[in-house]
Length: 491
Figure 1: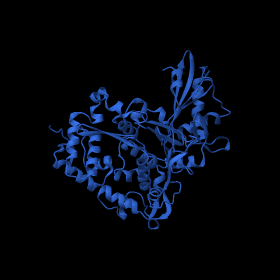
Figure 2: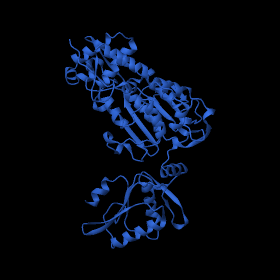
Figure 3: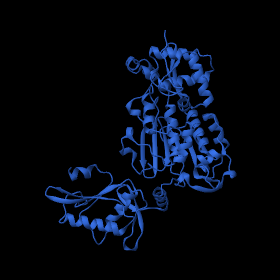
């Protein structure tokens, strides 16, 4: 390993030309910040302009670093010290993993300060930062904390209704305790408060705007539609989804005995983005709300709070981001209602939804960006400046991406079979959505349909029965009870 290469690649690091024994705070604040964050490394023997100057006594420096951490840090974080030789010079590498007993304080010179990392600087933690670190160190989440509101003081009509519709069972008073929405003293947790019909948490709101043009200052008309929503998180999800639906369009064209549908934004991708924004936002950030801004060519969704682990999303491999939940209690109840999956990364699902869309091309790939205190998701309008004729008459598109555009003969036969179902229009539309998502290879059950099509458990069961009766789906053996897949239709 070459030290120069390591420095160039590292995103969380600090460097010191020498060990400043009389000013330990100058480097221990970085130890505190790294331990309180996602970890990092300090390089001793490297100048500010990244010249490898080396150390005269690397072993002695290493011992003094270890002693300073033990005596001037509380608690003392676990660190890894190594002496590295390169080009005839010696250096000390101090690696600081992300700690589990946060906050980690610098306690020298009569001070007691916890530091956090902002960009490439280590700065004193704010009051809110300290609260987050205390929760993390006690293995507690914000949404599990008890509030001053009793269970009886607020109503949960929306939550109970949607839970019954999407699961087929009643949400009982004992479930509120089991799901950690109410504590042992019958007081609501923060999760329970956020799910109440009239949530007292006033900054839990959703601002939605359909702007005119490509930015917020077009100079002609500021906004075509503008809404502000408050209340239960379930209501916010429904309202946000409905706002997007009302302010976007769907193209379609008849092809043979079927048709091609081309929404501006994949429905599942929109749903996933809004769910993530509401569930994973940092509710300790006061004075900021979730925003949905729709422009002619894109949709931007902003959520207060960066990545839960402190990482910067644009620096990660988006296809392999581990699922970490800032608000596990809220995430659990949403999973039970089939609004989200318990496993996997939402980023990957959103990108997959786009890649299955008719008008997908690399330039409309969704973009995710975060800062320590903010998260942004940008979904691009698949139909923006794309002539419908160009897409539908392109033979290469039809030949190569037949499954995407539903033009392949097998797909048209499925659509024809669905159109002939003894069912109402909504049931047929839901069947087509399910097939577009699953195709012939996907295996699904009733719960999968609930999440994909966004219907009640009763409607999902009815859809399965209709498809079975018509011979459009068949049972799959060996993957659990009640699993099916679409069958190829004969001409």
